[in-house]
Length: 171
Image (cartoon, rainbow, N blue to C red):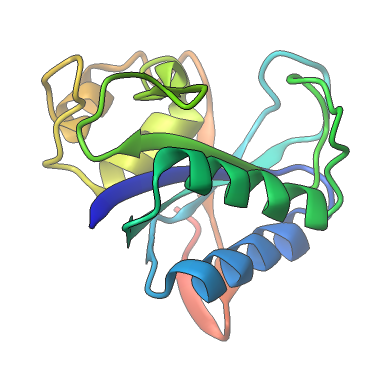
């Protein structure tokens, strides 16, 4: 079973689609580990702010099957199949890591490069898996977050509940 971390985000009906994404992932993969949810400005385009989080799961699915499942979930929840990269979206699910795999696997670059570039990915990943080491940088996510220029991208933890369970509270 591979340990996988996924980045989830939404900036259209944010709470609704983030919860729907969690429902779909739970139905497919069972137990999920969840970071807090963070409110973040859109990066790369002018748009409404996103809610972002990181989800951990264990799976025996191959990277190609996992990527196909993520794409299907996105499309089932309103994402246009031909949506441009930097645009508004109901649901965005990215494979961040798949165990310690490095390189391009079935069209998926692992680990996802934006882990080290974007606070909306690194902060929740450092919260969920603080001692886990980035497979290329070789440093823990907690250390990477501590050394990140945190003033460069504002992220703010927000209240969020899923299935009646509070998974995130405002800072």
